[in-house]
Length: 423
Image (cartoon, rainbow, N blue to C red; front, side, top):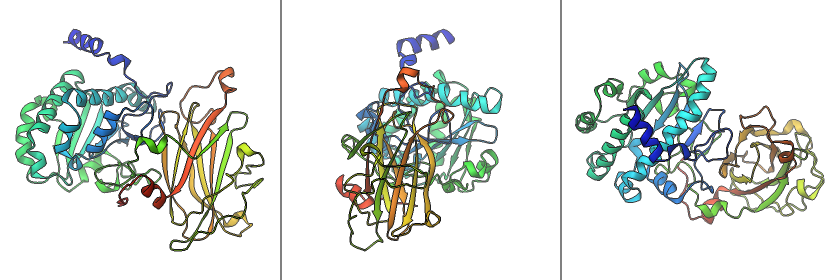
């Protein structure tokens, strides 16, 4: 059997898959929260993400590698009850779905498990899976084309990645799921069946396995991942974050250069109370000293010449870079007319992102008062993240930072998107 496994990997070129790891710039295959091998991220339309994966992501209810269980194992959460089941066979072939699943498993094996092993100071080689069936319907559970795809994927998974699963919890399982489960379990090896627990709305067993601060609040924990659009598990079918098209990241409004010698850049704009009309800024804030003591006294590191007044509390920042180890973002707000830094509010504390893998979308919530919003970027320090240090000659090459800052209304209108459904 082991020879067949090696032969499959060779024929399928599995070792050549573009798996996101600390030493490359490949995009993550799904949302990630709480690891250091790669920064927290959602799937966005970067160069390395093809249209087929984006179409598939829009039919799936949402999946995320979300932190660890009590013994240090990675936790994968799938909002399977929100899958648009009838559209999955239309969007992807069985082979395409299996290829995507293999990419997820390789990301687990090559990237997350080594990090978890290092933290646990022992080999961690299995994952915990949580399948949330909230929202599932009888029609979805009886959709034959999708069930056939699931059967084939489960067969391949048991053959190609045996024993990778420590335990799977199926939560929020409605009574109608029992009928489907009788059929699904007939496709599984008895050892796999013994690791699956079917739960209802009582999440106590989940909390025995996963600490509350690592478990999303919608599953009975206390985590909300409010620093990321979509929270703990972003879902296109749920509409809990903006599903931006590729064009949204193709032509960002501002282009600047940062580097290891000039590592900082700031953007300043006004916020206005909801319902008030815009009040344009009279002049750009050239030479303004912010909370971090950043001097914006050169064209490259100054505020844009036409700052956009923000009329709502929710503000979105899109940004990407063409290289580097990642950038750290911090956002601050100060009441309009105030000269005291003590009046400032930290809207978004420092966080590391890796826009060299794929564009990043951040959601900010500024106070509902007239004020100034300051978005600070800086090059990641050498002790931040796990990306390798650049060679001396690479460190001399400037990093192209491109970004746009928009109100929620502006963003949704520009790309004809529905309102965001925040929980």
